[in-house]
Image (cartoon, rainbow, N blue to C red; front, side):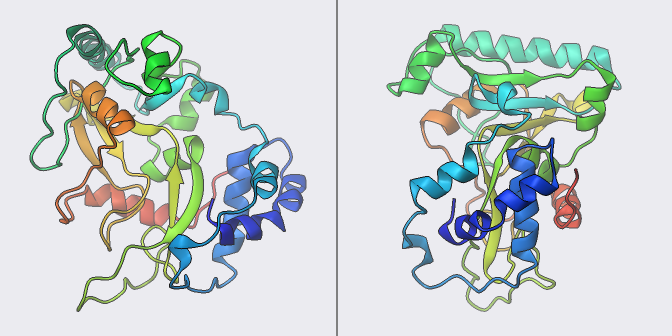
Length: 293
């Protein structure tokens, strides 16, 4: 966590917890973040990116509490496919079958990862993947032994669970399943102006709200037709892009792409161009200042 935010939280976290009993760590962090954005924060200093990290004692106090979604994520080393549309069970079954096929092909074939689509600089498709070999990291070896999943499906069956995820935005998904932080926003290109009005997901006083955690793949109403999902970005790319931006990836590409992102440090970009899904960005920007309990 960025030092300036950690110190801000350290002075308010206990009070926010007391005022919001029965919630969880991510919600409490978001409550404090609301206060941070409302405090007229100072702009990042020139040396902010090399600033000293917060102390372990401060981080422990802020991150030791449980969150309702921690259990879902406990066996994931890569990402989760979140079902947010429940209107077409047959389409979902077809999607799940294709995801499983891609999982089996990746875990059993030993082939080189597929090349990325030209427009994205990466490849994409989805399924519950238990890795079997091919990586030196501890996480990938444990995934190979079946202890963890590269991609896990979140498909609630109870109506009260489905209503939480139904038609949620990328930003809402990030706030439920990832941990929030801030960073200095990307550099403003020469000759360009800062966005107006400011928005925390792009640039607010030189800062940008970002998230970290598992990769999010969102199955929505469009997925019923095109068998693709939204791959969500946890932070902006070049200046003007936003945290929560997404692009659509076909189900067959999810395991390969997740493998490369998790263990080969693959980054999704468009060679400096803004080709993200604008309607989803607009939705996120409109929801940025709204905290859902």
